[in-house]
Image (cartoon, rainbow, N blue to C red; front, side, top):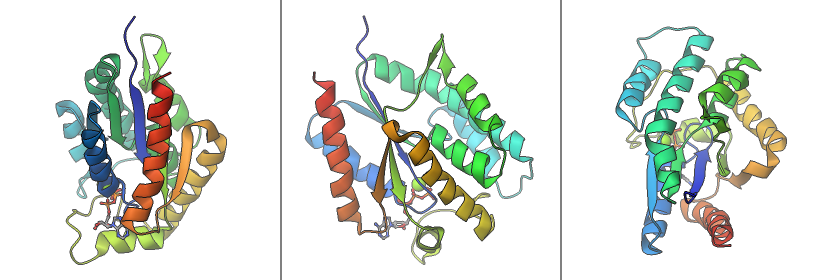
Length: 217
Ligand SMILES: Nc1ncnc2c1ncn2[C@@H]1O[C@H](COP(=O)(O)OP(=O)(O)OP(=O)(O)O)[C@@H](O)[C@H]1O
Ligand SMILES: [Mg+2]
């Protein structure tokens, strides 16, 4: 039988600190000598990176369902080509965004509702098994704080098509995450991401330590 690694996902609104904290997680896992793969969605493999650029391009107009289907297509290829092979080798996989991003942004933000779950269940079903994250580490901030960070003078991040959505959209996304946290309580850890970077990481470290400890049993 193949070893099974841990699939850990960082979730949260734009500017909540996912990319910042993933860099800290990588350092921590390296220090501890833990074999891991760090990746991101949409993207992580060539075809999915190409789909990413189509989705995020500010020049591209598309319906909400098209957006949802593109994310799901990128998700499936990334899962098959990168995530599952790493898990089968017993590695820890750290991923920047996964299914919960679609449920919050397309389901709640775009108000597409249940169809997003249906599409995603199909996208993450590989050979009869649905690959859900072992844990979603959810970085919770208000859209005001998140967007302010992104638009800050020295933020080294390009503004994408979803950033340009209305305030109402970003509030629906955040409220969506809070509902998902209740609905999928067993696979969510909510962290107050309005704290400073080190305090956020201290909370994340606790979650990761517990998860990796349970891996040893
Ligand atoms: N805890 C924090 N306090 C203040 N600023 C922060 C904190 N964490 C990250 N930042 C800053 O906020 C900006 C956005 O952070 P980051 O890119 O990590 O967010 P993100 O969740 O990856 O955003 P996106 O969803 O847009 O990729 C960066 O300039 C980063 O330096
Ligand atoms: Mg990021």
